[in-house]
Length: 474
Image 1 (cartoon, helix red, strand yellow):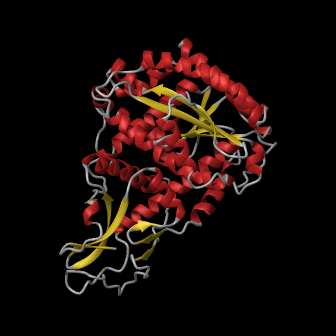
Image 2 (image 1 turned 120 degrees about the vertical axis):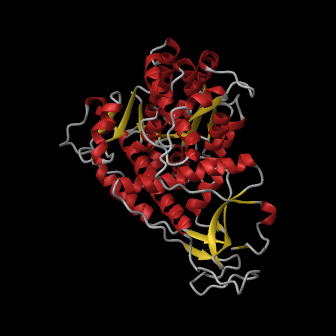
């Protein structure tokens, strides 16, 4: 049996799209649509969807009743609280650092590079004092819009932490472009306003951004370890899924360019859908090209609030049942065989899956000016032996005193670890191309006018290192 592990942030995004929850910023809508698509694909291509029962206590019962087809797992019963302790420990070890306007600590630097966006900090004048300001380094509207979407997704993590009763720190080390530490008596070199007096610290927006990144790391680590323990594939809120890719590449010793290699490969190549991702042959990636189901369902129903139910109604269509059977067999082969042996058999199955996906794209795809919008469902499978040889944190042993839900009976048999990879930048571009379907998907979104939202600012690349009466480079 295959399981999809959904986080509560994804379920909240689904409720924002359906109009059941308010949205803090219009910039988060497109990322929420990507989250909805992830959820729909989990419904269609997995035998069972599970979630961890750790939502805001006063809304817990409403959340469970709203998603009756999801199995909510008790954290304490399954030792997941021990995993959560590890997540807090690991995220607490992060050392955020900004130098010359950019993040230089590997965790956040790799995430921003993977998101294919450029975030910089500059000294901007306010009340005759220079304050560090967070900006998008971009010179066109599409790049700036992408930054707005991604920044809104990151800032939403802070709200998630606060609502769940957690507080993360926004501490960040600051160094200027010359490598000099920035303190409260810091003067901006080359400043064209006054004597360059600065606040000498990160602005509130930067501190909030860093705190959001720390919580993003915490949740991504927690769900990664929980997925390994539960032998499930994670379908996390898109920004978390991006961080997870970077985290797994480090803990599994694939190399820092590993997630970018995977995402780039399957974003550009259609013909080759099975590749080795590690020279030792301990891991393999498979990819399936799929239509944007949520867009098709939006046009069929005309109402985003009906999309989830509509997804369950087509789940048993013959072509989707067959696809689930094939993906289940791929998982079984990797669990029961070594990677080399499994690859030969899986290659044939993937070929069959892709023949079927052609028919699925025709049946469930929509036509736009740019053609047929397509997404990639990418799985990376690691053998269990590979994980025991690296720094991947150990998950707690199975507690035999606890009665495990019947559908999770195979927890006692350690198996490989499989993760789902997405290219958020490509997925956002796909959403932007949907035309009428995009209008339908966003039609029920309601903005919380009382909520505070980050307002993005833009820095054009040609002025990044320039001084003016209004700003100076960090």
